[in-house]
Image (cartoon, rainbow over all chains, first blue to last red; front, side, top):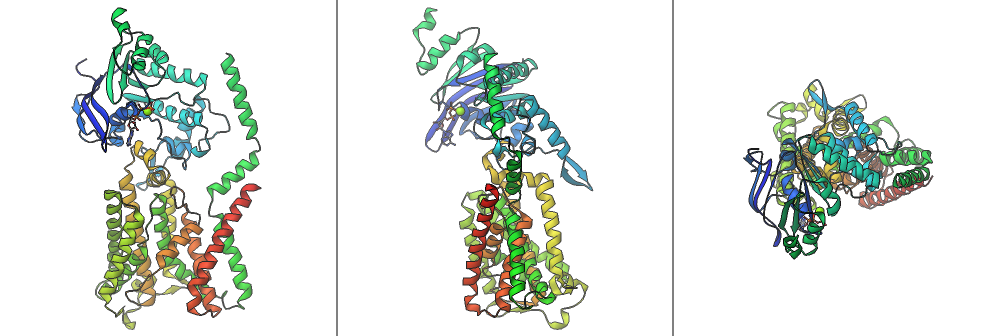
Length: 256
Length: 344
Ligand SMILES: Nc1ncnc2c1ncn2[C@@H]1O[C@H](COP(=O)(O)OP(=O)(O)OP(=O)(O)O)[C@@H](O)[C@H]1O
Ligand SMILES: [Mg+2]
C-alpha cells in the first residue's frame, strides 16, 4: 500500500484554553479494524470528530487518501466516504426514522424540475434496516425517533452507517445500550466491513472484546496517543495494564 | 442462548406495556397535529362572535376585512414560523413589513406594480439576510439581533417618511396590476388572500415534501445532529431568515396596496401578533416543530378578535389589553385541550 487511507500528523486541538488533543500522530489503513481505547475524557471522541469533520484542528495535518484535508465539515467527510456512528449526536428526535435515515442526503424524484422527497425509497430502505436490526414489529419507519428506546436509537444509527458504508466506518462506542445479542451482531458487522476492504475505527472501553476483533489497538490518555500496537504483538492483558497505568509503560511488557 | 431468551421476554414485556394501540395512536395524532387546538378555538370564537354581535361581525363585508388582515398578518406569521422551525426567532418582522410597504408605495408610481412588489420583497429579503448573517456569523442569540434590527429599520422607516406618509393618488389605484397586490377584491376576497393561500401551499410543500424542509426541521430539532449528518446548519438558518424577511415585506406590500398610503409606523407591534399566531398555531418556540396552517389560523383568530372588539364598539385604548387577555386565555385553553386529549 502506497499511503495510509487516513493519516493524522502532529494534531493539536484546543477547546478554549483546554488542550484536548496533544501532538497526536496516527495512521489508519484500508482493510484494517483499529480499536481506539482509553479512559473517559482521554480524547477518543474528539479525535474521531476531527476525522469526520465536526472539529477543526488547531494545529497539525489530516491526510485522506493522499490529499491533505483543508476544509473540515461533516458534509465533506461524508462525501469522501466516511460514515460515523457518533456517541451523543446523530439523530433528530423530532423527525421520523425514515427522515433521519436520509438526513443531509435525501433521495429525490424530480417533478417539473422540483426536487420532491422520494418517500417510497426512504421508507423502504429504512424499514429494511430496522427489521434487520431486530427492532420490534410495531416500530415503523414513520415513527418519530423521540419514541425509541436507547438501544433502538443506537440500532438506527448503526444500521444507517452500515447501509451507506463506503470507505470508512467510525464507530464511537457502538454497543452502548445494546443487548448481548445485538452487541454480537455489531461486532460481526465490524469484522465483515473490514473484510470487505473498509477501514473500521472502533472506539470502546472493552479492551478484551475489541482485542479479539481488531488488527491494531491505539490507546489514548489525556489527549495523547500512548500506545499503538498490533494485536499480534500485545495481549489484551498487557494493553489493559497500559490503560490502567495511565499510559506509562509497565515492567511486565519487557519481562514477557 | 440464555441471554437471547432473556432479551426475548424483555421485548415481549415492553410490547405488552404499549399494547393499548388506540391510546398510542391517538397520542401520535395529537402530537403530530399540534394545530388541532387553534382550529377548535377558531370554530368556538366564530360561534360566539356570530351569536353575540347581532350580525355586525358575521357579515360578508366584515369577514372580507378579517380575511384581508389575516392575509397580511398570516404571510408574516408563516415566515416567522419557518425561522422558529430552525430554533431561532425573528422579532424584526414588524419593521420589515413597514419597510416593504414604503418601498412598494415609493416605487409603484414610477414602475409597474409587479416590479415595485418585487423590489419590496427584495428589500425584505435583504433585511432577512442581514439578520441571518449576523446570527450565524457571530453566534449571537437571534432575539437580540432581531430586536436590534426591529429598532434600526423602524428608525429608518420613520426617518424616510419624516412625519409624512407615502401615498398613491386615487386615480392610480386601479388596473389589474395594481389590484393584484392587495389593491382590490375579487368577490369578498381581497387579492392578498390569494397570495396567502399560494404561499401557504408552496411553503407547506417545501416543508413537508422537499429536502430543504427536512433539513430545516432537523436543524431546529438538534443542530448538532444535523451538522454531524452533513447539513450546512448556518446556510439553512440564513435561508429561513431570508424567506421570513421576504414574506413580511410581501405582507407590507399587500397592506400598502390595500390602503394606498403608509407612514413610518406601518406594521408596528405586528411582530408580536405574528409570534402569538405561531405559538397559538402549535409552533414550538424551541424549534423543530411548526405548523404553517396553524400559524395562519392563529393570524385568523387574532384578526377575528380584533374585528369583534371593533364592531362591538370597544374603545381603542382597551384594545391591546383585551387582545392580550384573550390571547393568554386562548393559549391556556389550547394547553388544557391538548392535555385533555392526551389523557383520554
Ligand atoms: N466541545 C467541547 N468543548 C470543551 N471541551 C470538550 C468538548 N468536547 C470534549 N471536551 C473535553 O475534551 C476531553 C476529551 O473528551 P472526549 O469526548 O474526546 O473523551 P472520550 O475519550 O471520548 O471519553 P469517553 O470515553 O467518556 O467518551 C474531555 O475532557 C471533554 O470534557
Ligand atoms: Mg467518547
